[in-house]
Image 1 (cartoon, rainbow, N blue to C red):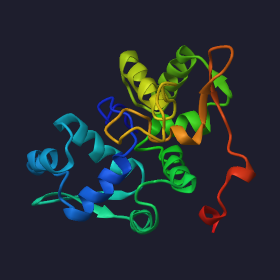
Image 2: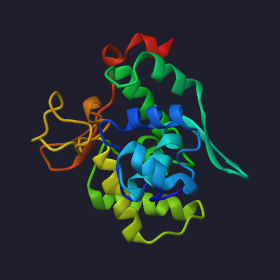
Image 3: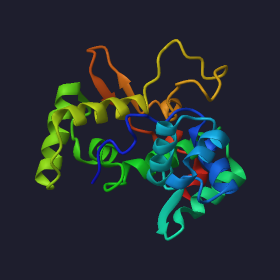
Amino acid sequence: MVVNKHGSFYLRSGWGTKIIDAVKEDETIFSPNNEQTAVDTIGLGRVMIRALRYWSDALGLTEEEKKQAGITKKKTALFDLIDQYDRYYQRIGSLLLMHRNLARNKEVATAWYWAFNELKNQSFAKEEFVDGFHAFLGVNGVSVKRAAIEKEFNCFKNTYIGDDKFDRKTIMDEDTYPFLAPLHLLKINDEKRYEKVPVTKAEMPLEILL
């Protein structure tokens, strides 16, 4: 189980495509000894490059292998499917698959797993999330400071909730629009609490069930 491996950089619109492009070009792009090359090629700063390295595995697009020459990102079958059919993540089904992989990834995306599997309340305040997740980690032998949990909460909610001023149709991928905001799986309700919104059968694309 891990916390803050993303360096507090939540998934942004366009990052899924950046991962696909970068790993297709060079499977060792996220190796530390290639960091400057990654900065120049992908067009993000060093800390964001390290965040992409984390998100690549957390989303189930790659599996990291450590070799003598450095780190290699092995492409998964899902990587190839997304690359072939929806590399710009324009289909809701593709985003749902990314969300699914986060929500079931207990070891790598622990906060996402906990929020959608262990947290029973449909709505919650930040303090309730932080206290509950902190306790969950403690029971499982993971000792972290509360401040780290608060950062993890911010990254979690920013993955799903975008600012009202953003227009999904006009922003560029360099903007800070959350990668999974189009799914509307998390919202702030009338009581100013965070609320999980389940996906209905009608909203579930048939192709991701096949």
